[in-house]
Image 1: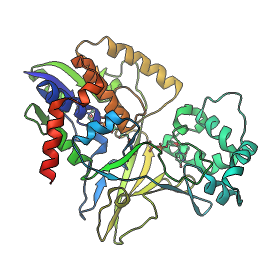
Image 2: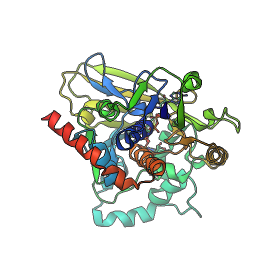
Image 3: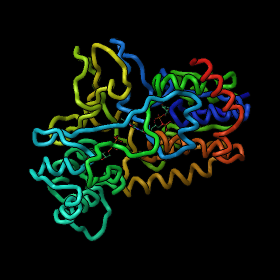
Length: 386
Ligand code: FAD
Ligand code: UDP
């Protein structure tokens, strides 16, 4: 008899499995229809021995000490601050837009002190900030919007920014200084031995049974369990009864090149040329030393594996109906990016999963993270590593 059957071995399912098994002695079956753990954060060595992220670049960053402390139980870290350049008008410029981006693209020599006034001058003032277009034009004006955001967003989402919630482009700040980091979070680091190794450590426990290559619907009838934790697409769980929720997909084209380094930074965005949005060179992220280098090109598309919920008011309305149904479904808990239809980063998914564990167990999230059993486990991992 299992206490929990958990569908999906990504961040959300794996955190719930690890917490409930390690902290509360629960017996857990963790299922995934893919042939690996880690969900979309899965990484592996390609045929040339280069560590790559199968489903596109995953860069860990968070402001949550709880989340960072929790994952630190299962991995050491490599400090890494992410940098991205955009290829615009034949030049490579920093994104998020900063002082250098503006000076290069507008042929100026503004100083930090002059930047804010310049942005004020070129910004448009829409009556309200509702869409992803409004967010950008209200801060940096139409020219930079068209050069940096419109084309990229159309490719990425198959929609014009004016048809997407403000929250999508609001992920990208604008800086009046020369800070060229993609994120400014307190904790920015990559798991030293990769994401998959971190998941292996998380799930290595006698109370956890991992079953791969298996859709839960094919086995659930023959398993004895008390409650289900579901991390797949919520509309699929309910047989699409309120209609399909759109999820944007991506085709990944991986390539290995016979040079040591190809790009000056990990990611180069291509807002206006090509069918792909960005090219990622993994060695920047992982710090791996290797005579060759591997990159991935991302081609957004419809259909295929669901990767991105699409933030738009009509989709939010459909999700609300599924959410209400989920709340009334006894003994099933919905968590993660697909099951709660939220454009969440990894740390947000971990926080959501820890919160669910707190609810299931009656403890607070902080208490869960600091449980003595986990501290003992950390000490063991550290002594193993030494
Ligand atoms: P998933 O990782 O999608 O896991 C769900 C799992 O459920 C899947 O493995 C699936 O196979 C399984 N499943 C579904 N249905 C069934 C079924 N019927 N039976 C059995 N198994 C099933 N976040 C960051 O913080 N930083 C980044 O840089 C970043 N980059 C990203 C880049 C891309 C291209 C994408 C797509 C996402 C990125 N993210 C990033 C977001 C990150 O991937 C997610 O926040 C996180 O992986 C979500 O974890 P999850 O467990 O909710 O979902
Ligand atoms: N975006 C853009 N140009 C860029 C980078 C981002 O237009 O050079 C927009 C685009 O709509 C994208 C969103 O900002 O989907 C969020 O970007 P982020 O890098 O956070 O996307 P993710 O890594 O989640 O794919």
